[in-house]
Amino acid sequence: MLGPMVEVLRKEVDCEFEMAVARVEQAIIDEGFTVLLSKSIHGVLKEKLGIENYPKYTFVLACGPEIAKAAIEVSKDVGTLFPCSFAVYEENESVFVSHTPLMEVAAEVGLATKEAMAPVVEMTTAATKAVWSRF
Image (cartoon, rainbow, N blue to C red):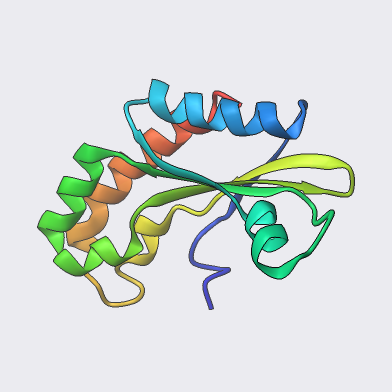
């Protein structure tokens, strides 16, 4: 049961969908992350399943090299939680951005001890807050 362990960050943004995706990508870059992939799920659903007019949903995958290195040094298995992901989606005529800080989950699912993960979680929290504050 992940709900009580980790807070999902969710924020309504006051801009059009495409601008929200661009803002997330730029915030990630501005805070020293690398954008690994930005993928339109609604586009995939249209292409592969023929679903027209599905609400817009894009995920943006990011890598914080220092955080990734620190996490992998704690446990190679923590890499199964990579990369950091942000979702941008439309719901009820509004645009939202969301993020789940998965490094906090590593100890809970047995990938590493809480003590070993504490510095990584601290780094991740600081970096995520910096990205989050930009939109």
